[in-house]
Amino acid sequence: MFITTQAPDDQRILELVPMMAQASQLLFDEYQHYCAGHEFNITEKVDQSPVTQADLKVNELLIAALAKITPDIPVLSEESDHSARHAWEMCWMLDPLDGTKEFIHQRDEFTINLSLIHNHQTIFSLIAVPCEQLMYLGYLTELPYKYSFAAQNWERYCKYKDIDSDAVQIGLSHSSKNQKYQQYIDYIEQDIPVIRREAGSAYKFCMMLEGEIDIYPRFHPTSEWDTSAGQGLLESIGGGLVSLNAMPFTYNQRETVLNDGFIAFRDEANQKIALAALDNVSVQN
Image (cartoon, rainbow, N blue to C red; front, top):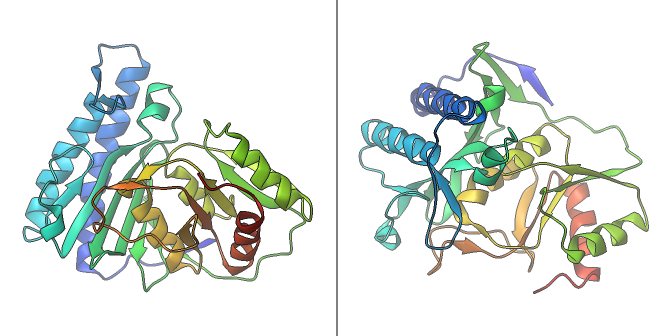
């Protein structure tokens, strides 16, 4: 849960928040424009994934803003050249529109993901939810904040003992129809009821921070900019995100920016449930 607090006294956060609020407003305006049926440019990348004019406009805004705020830190963005990335000890990792397919299908569950990578680890994370005018942000070593840029209200994550639940909440993407997901859920349901919650993009990580999802399995590939910010936020509250080999992801290290599948969990109790199911179900590719 989050409780009302004072604005943080941290220069980096105070510089990033107005930048991200501006980017979120731009993305929201683009979404409204698209949903209204106005002319809107959507093309395909080499890998046949869609990219919209909104992806590119938000990317341009944030690349320019980050260059002013942190000129010595390069940006590894989904929508920009990052061929020199292996020479970077520190970098920003950016997805200017995580959930492009949600955007195109007029589902408002899309986000902007930004994280700071140092020595292959996420040390700062920010996920903005334009349609809710919210952002979740914080350092790996501290409890995260939630900021409403509509109400200009700050809240801080508060650890508390959860009331024992008779069900576990499993987060799934709208496209999670693979049999592996059902196998995974079936194993958990042998001992505890399961509530399924479908949502798009990194929005599921925000739902985990809000206590609305306990475990988020993903059995098909993602990219590093899809998971870095979410992993950092979960780790900061005592949860985590691990590969299907139960190892935390590291970043800007491998030859490819593609991730294999993963399991994300909100806390230690759900980690045990999540990994027990992983050990006992054939989910490996």
